[in-house]
Image (cartoon, rainbow, N blue to C red; front, top):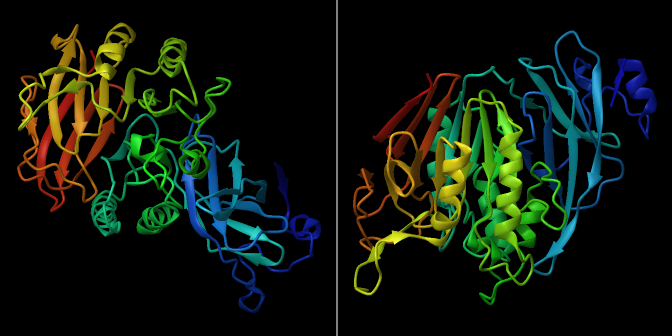
Length: 415
């Protein structure tokens, strides 16, 4: 990155374009650069860096990101070509890392290639230790992603102060179906450019068009989260800081992916211990797609209540590492289990929230209530979203139904 005066910035351009910086005369407005699915992805520390990804219909020549703020010279960041191929299609994609942002400052940014430029978008400032985030449950849809779009729009419009958002996995129904990914992205295209996204991998990201298990190539290429520095497991799991919280995103698809990335459980356990040992943040929060509990199922008397393999493997780790909250998905129903430790209710343990659904795949009446369920979604299942608000002493989780009604609220406090 280099700080440039306006004159220097124009001079270094490959084509010597004029008037691309803010404040140019109307007749010097550059040609429109036709980009799509512009999105911000969380970085290790969102207060000082951002990662921007976007797609185009035709390859670009020399793309970069320009950012500016009041009374500052423009800054530019080169883009990498991260194009890939899947589902018989070539996806022309570019990625740029924005570094060394001062905290608590708002920047605008846009994409430039040749003499063309995209619209301006905002890099939201990080407000400090206090923040709000949006959490979306599984957005998997059986036919069209309008339901996901409706839930997302309601959540964003009612929470304009949300600083980033998370989706707990099963973003799409079929991970190799390019039309589903494009539909998913288009439904939130208004919000992705300005609100960083933290993706969580789900099992439906691993399915081919023939419903066999494959590596989740689309998911792994569409989203570039922070590097976990674990060879052969890039983008499978990761962590990041925001305000007073440290977040870890885990991959629960070890059964599906054993042929492609064996030892996923042991590698993640080792990584999680090291990762959490290096943070001084007061709050520790985990997202993992598959749930920690096993439910009885209507019509299947042989199925017993208890813990899933995710719970049996990772709940002892969460206990020992002092995790405060664990958010899960997969079952398409909202359940608040309260705080658990050593596999029992315990107010010193982590709060476990099964987040619900934000798509149209519903399992009405399938699950028989678990003994640990404190609050559950109304039946038949309807869509919902959650908010997470955190400062150094307080953490609040709220669940809202798709009509905006508050279903549940939980608050934790630090001494």
